[in-house]
Amino acid sequence: MNYEIILATNNAHKLKEVREILSPHKIVVYGLNDLNLKPEDAEENADTYQGNALIKARSVQKLTTMPIIADDSGLEILAMDNKPGLKSARFASECGGHDKAIQTILDYLKDKEDRSARFICDIILLNEGDKPLLFEGIVSGHIADKPFGEGGFGYDPIFVCDELGKTYAEMSQEEKNKVSHRGKALKKLLTYLKINGKAI
Ligand code: IMP
Image (cartoon, rainbow, N blue to C red):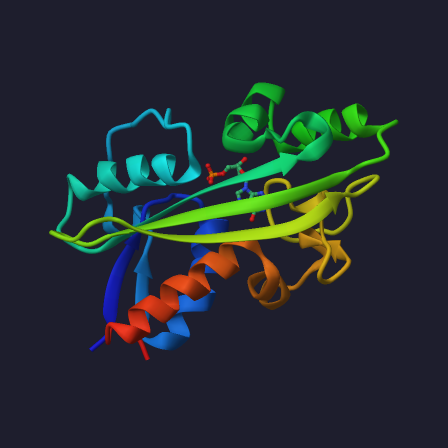
């Protein structure tokens, strides 16, 4: 039987990435929209990624008994004191969208020599009765001189992953899933689900 799980998001890009990794292993991933779940807006005010992922997961847990995964990610730029980091989503909306946020970052980094950055993804798995479990993925890279590529979402056009030497937005979905912060966290989740007989 397929293992069914809810991803606590309405972000279609995230859902696609997560499905591509988990579906081949007999895991059916539902987004909130698929099940018409409308959790109350919970303020993501924790001081860690895992804390915010747990807040997202708990807000959905009030509405269902199904297992839930929630992720929280952030882009940490060394020359910006690791900002926008935990506030990556807020930074984008305060700038007026990701395109403007990207431009703000590029302007800030114009004369900076060190453009190193990393992307972090914390995934929380919540199963009724169980303690929340954490799966983390971290990817090192740097910020490109200008946006490159058409794919992906969010900060993808400026984040160059060191492993492949191109931005997330220049990668196919398959490539991004292999190297990305979310891909790495999901692979750990998958290993856990396999060990526990929930995935093949
Ligand atoms: P959240 O995890 O949905 O709260 O996302 C935090 C911020 O990071 C948002 O601005 C997202 O658009 C951005 N973000 C999350 N994951 C990715 C990714 O894989 N690529 C680019 N931006 C991302």
